[in-house]
Length: 259
Image 1 (cartoon, helix red, strand yellow):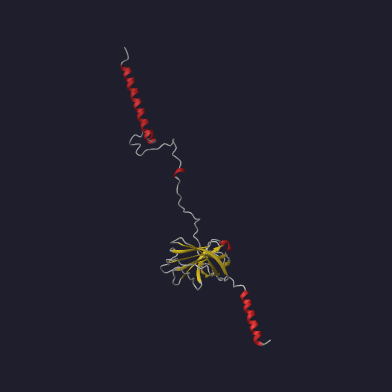
Image 2 (image 1 turned 60 degrees about the horizontal axis):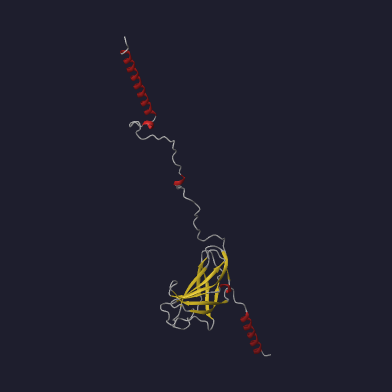
């Protein structure tokens, strides 16, 4: 066997091995079936996209991370622009879902689209779309493909593409190492204000036997509520008055005694 033949066989074998070799972690394509709805008309399309997600392996707590998104249509299942076309600066808004990771549920990215022709397939970005998110705490979970929208802003969605069957999505592991401490601690709301608010219904009613001394009781003749000094003066006056009556009575009896 000649040298040229051996070299050709070796190259063919290498190509065959590479074609069956598993893809790098986080870069395998996932066939995702979408149902896309044109909001202006309500028309729906079944669209199939091979979505490649690249999950970072060096993510850090409190630092924005990027999840790479790249989509290519399955031939014959492209998303087509409506017959009336799409006006304005049209962009792709892509999303990734994150599961089993507390306080981290999604990532989002945007990329401009080339000129769109009415009734023709909408070309997806040729470059990787960076989906941004930030983990506030250390942890782990999984990342999967999610919806994507076509529009001029995230709120002005002209075409919405949703995943009706999320159970078939490929899951990519995501891990953010750390001590588990929050990057932006939530203020402690367990402390209470030292000032207590009195419950009006819990305040006891005044006792019916309580004796109150009115202001100016002595000067105004407060009667039973006049206080100790007032009662003393009233009592002394009464004694003097009774003594006077008794003396007058005895004197009158002495004058009219018969002879």
